[in-house]
Figure 1 (cartoon, helix red, strand yellow):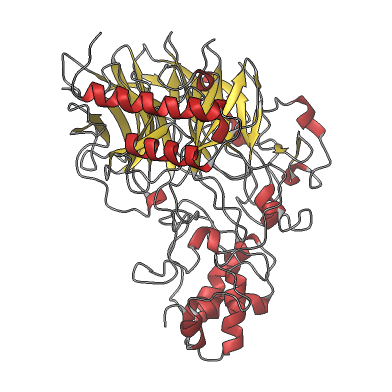
Figure 2 (cartoon, helix red, strand yellow):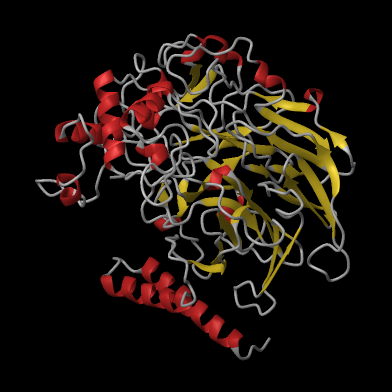
Length: 598
């Protein structure tokens, strides 16, 4: 067979890369020149790589699309058209949604690795839509979550967007609370598995509140905290507790179906063990417990929430403190729950999953799943983690090896407030490309394999150990002997409220950063009070006082009482931030927050 034009360039480059790798592997020693030649050849082959991502050897990524809205989950049609669901609301600070429908169709007609056709459809803000997370494809139709429904859009002819409105498949899905999203997956027979995640962190009487006991029984489990199953072939189904397929799952955002038809789901582990139960946990355990989980979904399976969480240090489900747990020793009812088949570092937030079922990547990637980790907030004041895509080998009903960091570099600074991009969705195209979505700037990445039969195995980076210490509390990256303090000048001249002192304001800054009192306000409100998707800004032009008049006394009252029902953000604040602050520390913290705005 003869090739011409671009195909000659492609195959010449590919052969060059293979030759370099083969020569290097058979050499008695790996010398620097071989590595340099291989790197140069790969750089030439990846010349269109504008992603900034860090990938194993032989892989390249491009920005397939950008700025499409808060992109969540994706699905690729057999034609190669990529469909994305986008979201809006308090999770994104109630910013203005993208114009047009919340569903986006992306097509690369020019075969250049970029979407050159972008069309929107589905509900809009004007029709009462807020977007959603879940999206899937079944029998040439697009299924998508919108508000409290899953709807179906039929495609006809060569059109990449539907001509008519959507049909409701199921309605009445629970909204509100901590986890209002409804990701789902549809198998080949039309069974649709939907995540109906929990409204609370751990089913406490008062959500996320210091030492508030768990409700027993946890009535929330009647309509939340599990996976529900419906029929994708039927319209106008209504959500019902009787349709629950599995229970005890706090938030199953990632779904995958393996080659044997087994359904796998990820589990977002609970938050705030140390913060809400400081007598039972050490400060560093806020960052290391509990593990995130990969579950094998079974009919009527019970995976333990809220009574249990997975402790990677003892490699067991253990009893939660809200239900009589003692910090990791008691097992109790957890002995009868289903344990995960794999576990990952605490709070990384597994938001999506994909089984690789194509042949463009090396064969080793067909025996496992890719998982997109949105990134943590609850590891503060220690370094945050996640913000990456990992590959987890799986064989049958168990993990067959340690997970590997497959794609990193989405966030230069891994914090909710400063991350440029956060991986949220995954999809595999019919050409074998792996797509990754980002819900901060609406970027879609396209990852392909361009060389070497080993498929990056030699350069794979293992995931960190689940039992590794979190390291020291972090404030700044550089660490000269005197410390690095970019705001030292501002801090020295920071305003002091009437009746306070500069020392009090300084103490408040330490409380804010979690250095004193264990509050770690930075996890929700950002390192400088700039706000995050979890909590409002406390300083700057976007700050507005929703619960006080902005005085020191008003701020202190809000800190003391907490915010159980946020007006614009999804995460409540427990009294005293869930910590055990003294009255003097509360006053100091209020003085510090006042000073940020004067």
